[in-house]
Length: 253
Ligand SMILES: Nc1ncnc2c1ncn2[C@@H]1O[C@H](COP(=O)(O)OP(=O)(O)OP(=O)(O)O)[C@@H](O)[C@H]1O
Image (tube, rainbow, N blue to C red; front, side, top):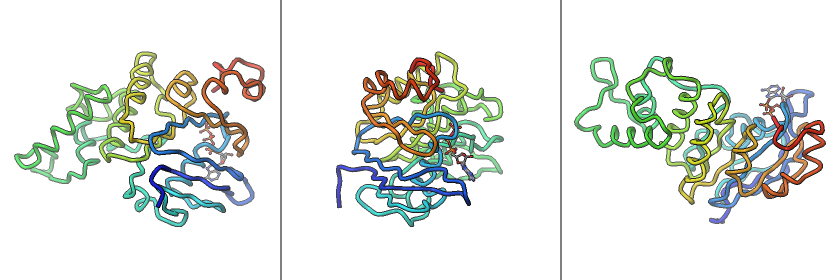
């Protein structure tokens, strides 16, 4: 079994009835590598993520995780093999606090008097919760109920929950959506400082983040992968400029 390849997507297509959302996409992500996937709205980026994570099955093609064929494997079994992802839309427990959400992601389920509370036995886990919140920039927000967190803070919390799973492959779908400029800078730093052994697949509309974090960039358009290159090659690409209607690469959105 290969140990230097985190992910292989081989000629994967996805059709929804007559709609060909994604056609013949292939990519390889090495262990510790960081790839950004960019492209206009409806290009098929989230569909690619959903096929990799097993949210729905690919119509054709093959997907390999850490050397193992997972094409027909459920999402939960892929997760157990080290894949963690965030979604474009929030999947948080709105009525619980930030800390309680991370606690649950860590596998905690101790209810005390109907509430999740740090228990003597769970102390170590609550310490991990605090460290994770600190890491994503949410120090001091642990007791805040999710509904009272800003949109940007909720995305940071989702990232903490994904990191709680100690993923080998982390897939983030537009993590900076709704972020303030300061939050964007913080996220860029956080992603650049991820442990080297975590392989990263990132969908991001913010080109500054997408190009700063990635070692390679994949451009999707109209359901197909049309280009792959280093951040510098993507910055210099005429094709990328054309796709984005003659704007500068910085206008890609
Ligand atoms: N579950 C679904 N059922 C039917 N059509 C879908 C489904 N998911 C996606 N599509 C369609 O597939 C195409 C690709 O969508 P997708 O969400 O993958 O694009 P995207 O690149 O992620 O776009 P965005 O940047 O707007 O999120 C679109 O035409 C979309 O309407």
